[in-house]
Length: 235
Ligand SMILES: [Zn+2]
Ligand SMILES: [Zn+2]
Image (tube, rainbow, N blue to C red; front, side):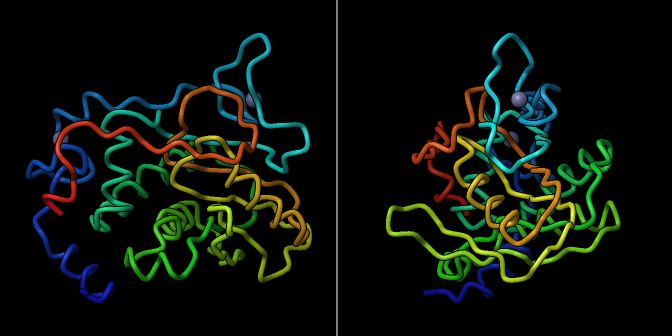
């Protein structure tokens, strides 16, 4: 088994490839795949979904006051996230982080610090990276706010990770960073831990949001549908 650090270093030294089609190209996408990338349309400030009559939103008791999403989670974006997260292309998180940071900077959320939905240690070891930390670090650098590791995570017996705050946040307004929001279950559990630690306003910032469906905190998180050959073959 290749140690995770070595795998990360090897990946960083590897030729840059499109995270979607794996052609030689600057990350995250080659020009062909970039044409298929869709930004998430501007919508509700609380959940980011397109506004409309009865639009689905976070449940009233979800401790999330705002949501920023860069991309629609499909096509090359979904493939890129899965490739970077599960197939060893850890260098891909750097350009993806720059994209998230640019959006957050433009939206200028009223927050005091940046944190992230951490990955349990056992998976960080196998993947070689706590990917949401890389995204959050890019955001914190860009908006010049402190990056604070607030959350601890352990795998839950039901397949869902559990979060607890390891520092207190009395009255702090927090930007909570993750890669993708799908059902919203993970974000609600992480935000709940932040609120229990005393956080004030909590704004979620994600690279991609999956559709405009209700964010209910449902127990199952759908996985991205990937077409074409397995990214494993090239990474
Ligand atoms: Zn491509
Ligand atoms: Zn909404």
